[in-house]
Image (cartoon, rainbow, N blue to C red; front, side):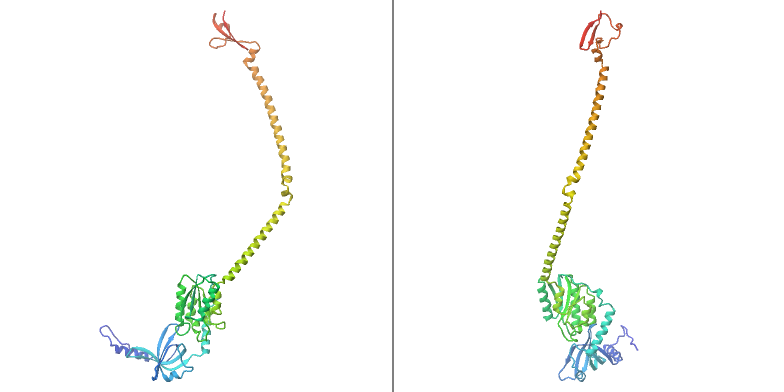
Length: 402
C-alpha cells in the first residue's frame, strides 16, 4: 500500500529507504546487457566491483560480483567488454545506493556481436541513413579540415603528413579522443558536434588504425552512426584497413580505405593540379589557334571572290555609268529650264519696256507738269504766265504759258 505522507506527517529517512528497498526487491532477478566501464578486484576480498555502462544512453549501473562468478568468465573479463549479467537489484539502506548483485556473467561472443551489428545495419538501412542520395560531395579545397582521431596515433600522423605533402597550405583542426573503450562513442560524438558547429570547417575526417572487431565496435554504435548522419558538414570515414567495415563507413559521405586514402580524398595534389592547369592552358592555346586559323581561311576565301577581289568592277563601275547618265540628264533638264526662263524674261522685259512712259517719250512725246508736279492734260488747267516743266526723253525744259 502507498504510504500517506504530508508536510506535517513526513516519514524518516530510514523508512523511505526501507520502502525503496522493498520496491526494488520486488523487481526480482533480471538479465542486463552493457559494457564493462570499470573493474575492481580487491586483493584478499571475495567480492569484485564493476560498473556496467550503456554506450548509447550513457547510463551506468554498479554491479557487485562474487569473486567466483568473475573467475568463471571465459575469456577473462576486461574493461570495455560487452557482457550480459544475470543479477538481483539491491538497495543498500545505509548509503542509499542501488546496485546489481551478479549471479552470472556471460561475455557477448563475436558471432552474437556480428549478428547484432547486422540487425542494426538492416534497421538503419531501412531508415535510409545509408542512401547514396543523402551523401554530400566533398569541397574541392577546404578552408579547414576537422580531424577526429586518437592522441598521437599513427592514423593522425598519416592524415596530417600525407595531406600536407599534397597541399602544403592545408589547415587542420584536430580533436583527440578515445577511439576504443567505453568512452569512445561519447568523445567521438562530442568532437563531431564541436567541429560541425565550426563555420570554418568544411570537411570532417574520422579516423583510427586497424584493430579487432571488438576494438572497432564504437564506430558501429547506433548513437555515433546517427550523430554522423545528423552532421551538416561532409564526413569522411577512415576506420581501420580495407577489410574493416564498421557502420560508420556506410553512413559517412565518403569512405576512405585507410587514413592515407582519407588525406588523398580531402585535399587535391598541388603537383597534379599544376599539371592539369598546364594541360588546360595548352588545350586552350591549341583551340584558340585552330579557331583563328579557321577564321583566317574563311576570310581568305571571301577575299578571293570576284565581288571582293575587285569591288569596282562588279559594283562601282555599273553604278558609275548610271550616275553619269543621271548627272547628264540633270544638266540637260536644268539647261532646258534655264533657257525657257531666259526666253520668258526677254519677253517680259519687252512688254514692260513697251508699257513704260520712258519708251513713249523716246518716240517724241513729252509730259507737261505744273510746279506742284501735277500733269497738265488740258489748256484750261493752266493760266497765262504760269511756269511749267516739260519732260522729254533726254531731259527737261522750262516753259511759261503765253
